[in-house]
Image 1 (spheres, rainbow over the protein chains, first blue to last red):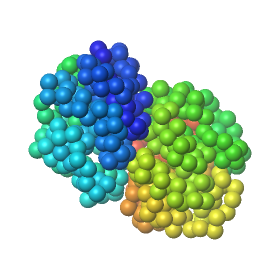
Image 2: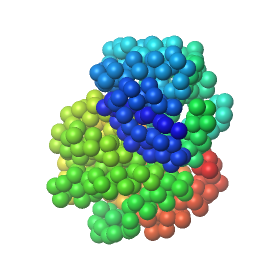
Image 3: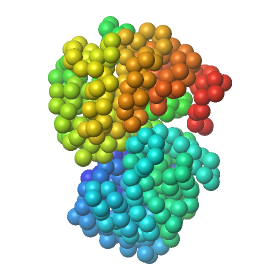
Image 4: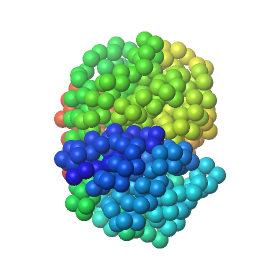
Length: 183
Length: 230
């Protein structure tokens, strides 16, 4: 199983690769659109600012490669900012156009302490994952929520999660296993 | 290394093995502070950070000697999820703004070491004359995502967290606060979690890493909500 983890200058991608390798996948960090297009599973990770991340994706031609993958029905996973970038737009940084893979937009969290950092349960499913974010998706593609916040959103072959499965202990490992088994 | 009230630092074990053991035993996060980095005038040891990170399945915060965005990015590249800044941010608060702009606030922890309510820098060795509450608020304004609040008075004593200090800081900011210093029992941790969003444990675990599992069980009995780590 070949897993391409998109590298576009945004945060810690090493732990995502490490997590997939522990599960026996042939995972690598890449900035190559061709590698992203060819992989069995492409992963769009990401922390940091939406504007800088979108610029990073465009500069490398990864925005096009990701859209094409999803249009062709090939498995693609967005994590944290990777979920938010898949939306039509984000209100972060004064408004940023996203990849448009998912309907809806990312909005700044308005309740509780922000950033929202820590472990929280998602429903349905009841498993606990690690979250660290200041923005969240508002999308009709939502399939699970956590404390009212969109935790999982899906459209076609794209699966986006607001939490960090690679940081979520045993529950995260099980989640990534399910991702690999769906490919 | 660990000391008492920031003094008498002594080796407590291999950070790679300890980190892996804590991750496997249900710790919610690992914080690694290279406490002597600033005093020694160097950055945290990147190769060691990478070796620790490769064994973890939980969030990983690293601090010690971070003076620039480049220092922080090197740590994230080595596998840290968040960087903790302290002395350099006190000298130049704009550093927090720069880090937040580049890494996002969720990756920027400002560590505040306090004695008698006042901030000390350089591993507790220098007085700053600033109130911990004021500095925490300023750090938040500059874009900090979390405050790691350590009471030097309580550090290593195992007599309980400094709840007064923690309550004051957590009440003044709207970002998460991690209480640190003084954990001796499950009751102490439960009390800290009443006023802060997270509680850091060091001395009591380093001496006996197996204590984490029994501590989790005791916390559940006290009615503290913990994730199912299995």
